[in-house]
Amino acid sequence: YLSMFADEAVPSYTWASYGPTIPTGSLGWWGYAQIRQVNEFMEKLPQAKITDAVRTRFTAEAKFIRAYHYFAMVKRYGGVPLITATQTYEQGNVEALQIPRSKEKEIYDFIASELDAALVDLPGTYTMSQGQNRATKWAALALKSRAMLYAASIAKYGTVELDGLVGIPANEAREYWEKSKAASKKIIDEGGFELYDMNSDKAKNFQELFLFGDEPSNKESIFVKAYVSPGKGHYFDFYNQPNNFWKDYSSLTNPTLDMVEAYEYIDGTAGKLKTKDEFGNLIAYSAPEDIFANKDPRMFATIMTPNTDWAFNGITGKVELRR
Image 1 (cartoon, rainbow, N blue to C red):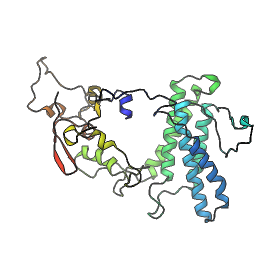
Image 2 (image 1 turned 180 degrees about the vertical axis):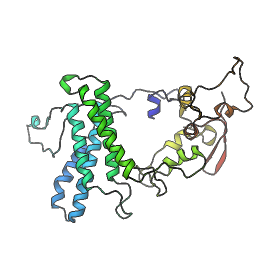
Image 3 (image 1 turned 135 degrees about the vertical axis):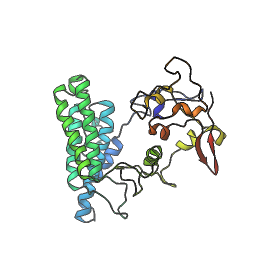
Image 4 (image 1 turned 90 degrees about the vertical axis):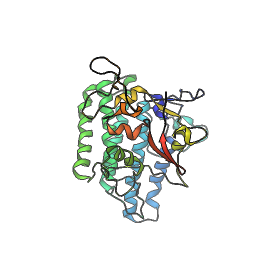
């Protein structure tokens, strides 16, 4: 999992390894197959036997999806070839397919223009019959805000190389930051979203925010990937449950001390675990979980501490963690 490529976690098995790299490994994303599908879809929409209203909405959704894929590539590789029409191979003419890379700035500007165009025709919500997990105008604004934030940061802190194929001029940073801020502010002011706050337990709120991402009660979700069985699933629970609840492949992802201490205490002080008192004497805790007392509730929703409640396939109990 991605947490193992950073300083958040380490794998527990000796055969587990790091190594996937950009552009060929699991961290890469070369989305031209998807972009071709979107281009072809948009080219055939005028002849589709659907109402004009549906055609208009589908066009806006397609623009969102195309922008989404270009953002996935530009944030990894910088400027990439900008292809907005279906390409056809003619025998012996490979050169016609070899579109040169655009500058990184040009790709970010294309993403912004695609999303601005999509915003005009995307609805704020969908009916159950249309499908709930589709791009709304709020999803487009959120994607625009994130992409423009990337562009601003690249301009501010990066360097321009290869004549702009990588990097954005520093004097462009403020304009991108303003675009990002404006998109987010529109969501805040007009979107009707609010923080998930269904429980008095703040840790439970942060956990359920992701577990119930597409539930009507979740007013915080903007754009959600839905998992459904049969259909689209994952093995995250299988690989990451505590050892004593399954015979193999458990506890694969082990959070580091750095990750635990990155969560501050609720009074705002730094998150370093308290092992000594003010006199320099080691603290004796009566229970192993006591050392985590008063930590940011989001830590307890993310990381299993000793004696965490757990249930799987009818088995319930406390997670026992030892050195």
